Image (cartoon, rainbow, N blue to C red; front, top):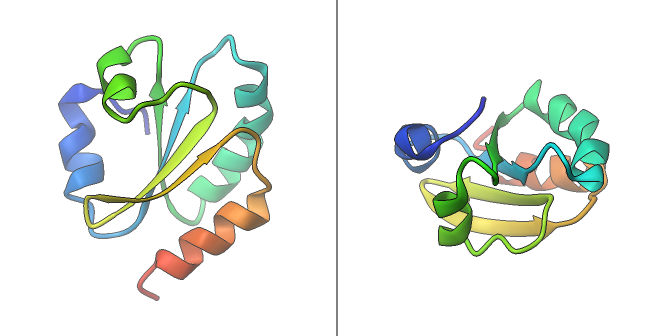
Length: 101
């Protein structure tokens, strides 16, 4: 799901399950490398994407200075931040740990 200012609160801050938010840009090679990982995680967890070029205020609010940046929220609170290319297994383990099941 693509996020913007208008749907951030509903999709992230009011979510009952953990949410992985991928801050990315189409011109970013490491972001493209992460895309298959993000898509795989989206099959099992709530995953949202924020294009930093079209959502600069949102990126600035969360102090995104390098991309890709993956932020994990639980109950509306930022609980983890990862920057750069990450292995799927690491992100998956963290999302499983935060999930209620």
